[in-house]
Length: 404
Image (cartoon, rainbow, N blue to C red; front, side, top):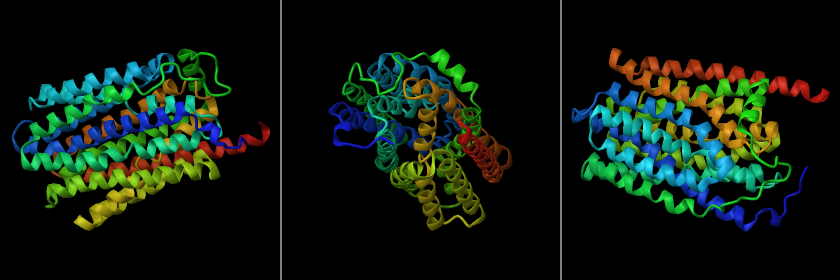
């Protein structure tokens, strides 16, 4: 096992970690706050719940489809080009949402923001840090990035709700567009040519890496289980504010719940990274799926109050992005960091197919039945499936270790 030294934390790594954390934090904060616009847009007659839900579903599908391509571009050319382009897409998408119509919501809030998030999320940014960090500190660096990346929601969500309440949702979207523009400046903190980590191939080869990954049983099973993560989290991010409003709670509770998710996630992600080094990536990932599903089941079974909502938000926040350290650890341990962006993108496509269905079917079920009950039950069923799949993959890898 490699020993950690202070020399591992090079200036290039530290500067890039600050830049990547800031970009991820702001991107996720913007993305997670979009659910706050459903209630005022629906109340104003601009769209229906189903329309908003389908736009967020489109966003997540565009994110998933775009992720392998954005990751491959970053693997080969670096992060500056990818993040600068994402800032333009983010601003354009938020501006189109201001129109308030279904078309602006689908193209702006769906397609453009989805592609922007693909270029400013974990597949791109964790890949940058993985290639800069030595094996001895790679897991720690990735955990720090994922933890810091959740803090933006803690600030952006309450601020967005305050602007909506004081002025209107159009002004709030304009403010978010200005924040998105700042991503360009952060991108220039990345080194143009990052040194490769020890043992990495001389150059990325996306096609060969994808072929190897799809022939690996552990990678395929983990990818299938990752579907549940997207299904659960994006249903909650999109529909929780509207759900608690239907239950009679004020809009500020929804914003506070999203903020609590952001702050608690920082602690949960750091703990997940620590546990991965002690227990292994697969078992920790299965435990996260199990605890998340149990939290959802309890929240659905209990009366919806301010207290139960905030406790649920804290629990979900603790488990929200805690999947990033074990997922990245599995990919790096199986294939190394050279093609991380591409391979994370392939795995993440499964996550985003689940996210598409979680956002869309949540809105559709409410439109048809007038309640979210079918959606919450689906979250529990899909989560249970993920636990079984991931436990199976972990047991299979453990049984194969003695003969390897």
